[in-house]
Amino acid sequence: MQIKALAVSALVAAMIAGCGTSAKEEPAAAAATAPAEPPKLLTGASAAMLASTCEGCHGDNGVSNGPATPSIAGMSAYYFAEAMAEFAAEDTKTTIMTRIAKGYSEEEIQAMATYFAKQKPASANQETKTSLAMKGANLHEEYCSECHADGGKDVSEDAGLLAGQWMPYLRNTLADYRSGERLGGKKMLKKVEEVVDAHGEEGIEALVNYYGGQRL
Image 1 (cartoon, helix red, strand yellow):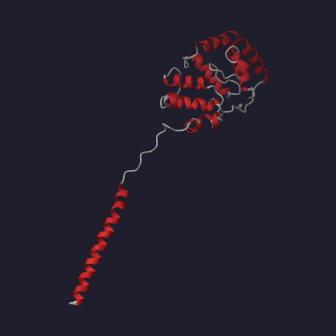
Image 2 (tube, one colour):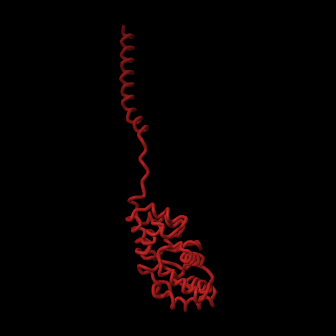
Image 3 (tube, one colour):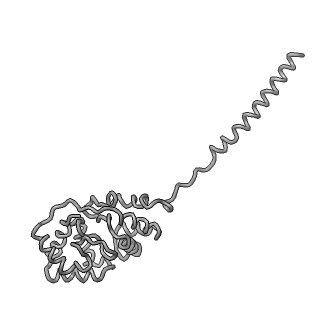
């Protein structure tokens, strides 16, 4: 009889222990099946984080290492925002920037614009032809200095940085104006046409060598 009582007591104790274990395991099981948190979106990111998405093409802090891509370090915030608006509206035709510009809100673009405006620009490391650069200096004063002051170093609201940019980028951009790929900037197109009419293709090369050789 005593043995039977002991067996019953042991069975009851095991059942109680089992119930306790089950109750403790329920939260862990629920946690294991809980849905994962959604990935954090770009909205709300810091200006530096937003700007980092540009650096793959435009270089660290906006100083380009690629000859076909412009440096955007030191560019005026107004000019940056206007350029992005033109890309998004497809007024300036590109293979990449149109899609990229459409992916940001106005607030995000303004944050990036302010960030890059505070960065220090640097000249591209490239060789120029002295004779062409000297001619380009004169052509700059005659045709370009009204908008692009200080030898193309000026970064006022309506002027992009020309001094120290990669020469292939400068050539391509001037060619885009002439072909109509850049719809914004009728005054710029008129000046480029005046240079070509008076000095031919050498005039374009002279300006490219002048700006490409400027030190920042």
